[in-house]
Structures are given as C-alpha cells and as structure tokens.
Image (cartoon, rainbow, N blue to C red; front, side, top):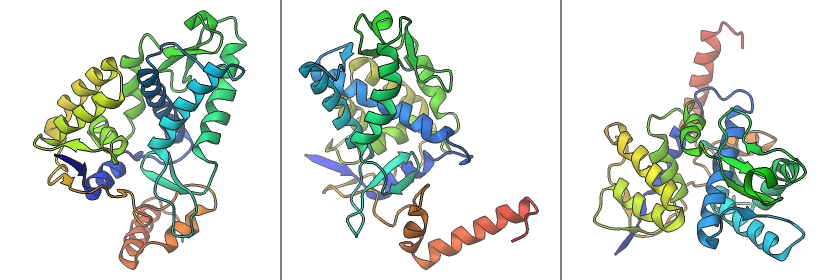
Length: 280
C-alpha cells in the first residue's frame, strides 16, 4: 500500500530550508544550483545517459534539454493561486507568485548562460562558481562533448556547502521531503526509509547513496517527522502557507494570510527593528 507525505510535515521541512539571513541573492543562487543539479541527475538516470548532451541544434540535445527541464519543473511548480497565477519556488523556504515559467527560468539562467558559455570555451567549465563548490562540469574539455554536462569530480564534497546557511539542522532530510512531496511512498517504514525508497526511483545510485548517508547522520536531529503520512496526495504547499518573496508578489501573498499569521509577522518585524534601533 502506498501513502503520501502529510502536508504539515512538508510545510515544516520547507520552512526549515529558508536561509537564516534572507538578504541578497545568495540563497536564490544556491537554490538554483541545487535544483539544476538534481534535475540533471534525475534526467541522466531516466535517459541512462552521462554526460548529457544538450545541444539545442540537435534532436537528441533538445530531447535531453526537455527531460532536464521537466524534472526542474516538477521540483519548483506548486498548485496555482486562486486567480490561476503561477506559484513556484525560486528560493527554498519561500513561494513566488508570478514570474517566468520554469522552462524559461532554466533556459535563460542555465542553458543559455553557463552551458552555452562552456560550449564556446576551450577550457573545462564548472558550475556553480559561487560559492566555489561546483557540482557540474561542462564543455568539450570537461566532458568530451561541446554541449555536454556531467558530474563534477567533487560534487559529493561540494553539495553540503550549499546547505550551510539554511535554518534547519536536517537539510538533506528536508530537501528529500520537499522534492518527494507529491510522490507515493511505501507504507510500513519510518519516514527516512520511505524517503530513501522514493529517492531510488528518481535519482542515480551514487546520489542516493550519498543522500542516504546524510539522512542517517541527521536522524538524531529530525524531530518534526511525527505522523508523517496521509492516504491521499495533497498539494502540500497551499496558497496561504507562505508569503511570496521578491517582486510585486509580496502584497498579494500578504493579503492571503490570516489575521493571526499577520500579527505574528508584525510582532517579529517590530522586534527586529527595535533590536537594531531603527525607528518605525
């Protein structure tokens, strides 16, 4: 029998993936790097292909791009807002209303910038460059294919560096919960074992082994996994669950929150302003 993750668990884990310091674009950049890497791994597993050739001028390259784009969209797309506006994750821990569709995001920010640059370079290129913790290598010098993408030699050492500024102490368990929020899980296991089974179906053996080790090390800190299952799939990140981040979406998101949540936010903000001696 299959079960699904409880929406409360998913929301709790998602909040824990937010950054301790939400200033600047660092967390958004790290989110993109992490999700592009996971999308690459999932596509490479599905296609049984590594390196992945994403040449936009060939049928195979276009198909590979489409496969990676689909995986990325599965990660970031949420249930539409009540007015049918797109809702998606641009930075872990927050929901954005509106913005470019996932296919345009990965195309403009990944395929047409670092990947294209690598295809034109005589040197091996790595991604991301910031922080200095690359997960992927690109280009002919690195992969043997002009438009090729493959795993960086040190991806397993570098991947945890993208999670160091997240609020929670169980980032890999929480990332798994977020990624698998709509997947059917085997019943009769503890939540980490169920997550591992679902990860095995979607990601490469090497990544799953790495993920399993990280989740095992987080077990002692994983305290928010009580009653983790439900019988039916839910949209785990409901429209009013989080305020939007960035752009003009903030006002719309705040309007969707209940009074108690708004009061909590005001009290928190007043405390921060007072702590820094800022008049308001």
